[in-house]
Image (cartoon, rainbow, N blue to C red):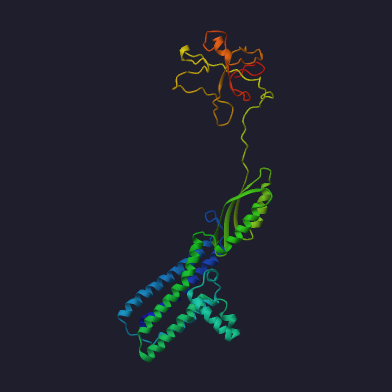
Length: 411
């Protein structure tokens, strides 16, 4: 009502700071409500993100109000109305008292933390440079102005100072354009103060890792990886759950003979100093050495004479055979393959002709004839000469078919 009666856009901009203080009171009530609430199955991490959302919404609304003031001020530069100073100075001091009382008398935990953790605004930097110069002359003021002033108190005092200058210039020279200039200055100070807080709270809502704790987290993870029984630390993820609360999850691979509870206690003890809400998943090493055989291997497997006879199926026509290799002579026919008890592989062995007969079930050990006697005996064609068998060139690998060294038939 006072803004309408004075027709001052500068007082309107300063009133938006009062509205922001009302939002800060609501944020303080939400913070107390969060402290009383306990985590539920739906909100397993608690309700701390509600106060983060409240801070983000308050700062964004304050910036939107500053943009609205900038738009109205640009329109007033084209046609400047008359400003009534009857209640301008009174409204300034009432708003200043309310703003300072709200910010200093109530312990607002969320905004206190954000004002310290967020980056400094351009207004704070300029005031800090001025404060160093003043404190160099008067050292007793260093406890008040240094090292960093409260941004909310700073913008309240700066806005009130701008309104006092506006009042004096209008009363002395009727210079109404200074009201619009003061409104633009208050809007820019509001935007510059709220923007770093919006960025900080927005990063918390996006679950990012705070930059100032990345180095400490890397050091703790290196210490965890050197613990007894720990083989690997992977899939680590840490994020800010609320203001001053860090959450994280990590997977730890340990040896098969390690104690899970002992490793879990050591890992939690190392990381809990920095991460208050921690989830650690322990799993043992599941790496298994591949074996060449899934069945017990006989003691005489490396004996060259204990090879296995593999009977070949009868061929349809004798003219399709090669007397040297006993394989089909057609180039389109695929070579014979034999599946050995090797995981994941089919070995294509070299097929050698055995010219001596090894009766089944007798266990006789016969040597192999040289290749020169193969053609002279005429055993390459079925029906001519004695019965024959074929063996593989892999003498140290058991076959799946045939007989073993003791003459017992294999399945």
